[in-house]
Image (cartoon, rainbow, N blue to C red):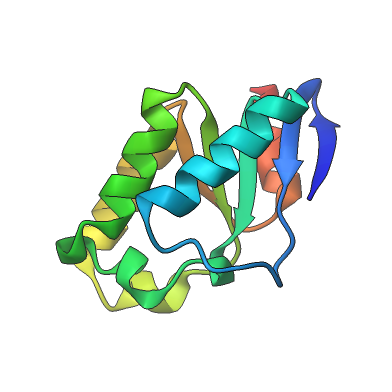
Length: 119
């Protein structure tokens, strides 16, 4: 994991090949690492999340995102999730609502994350 400043904001960039983020415990580990390194945001490649994360009825996404909210740490899910969005109107609405806020964003790449952090 690398800590980088993107538009002046410290962001912990997670590699694509790490352990899956599948439960609250995994989120807490990331939040702890990020906080220790001074990050305000964590950017996680979408492929690190299992299929259950993208099926809202499982509540996996809600549980993970809630931990980030509780600890005041931003979460960016980075990558192409179009196949998940095409399969679920609820997920499409959820992503749209998240992207309107200031806590959790679904972005295609770190350049888009930079634009959001700068705005």
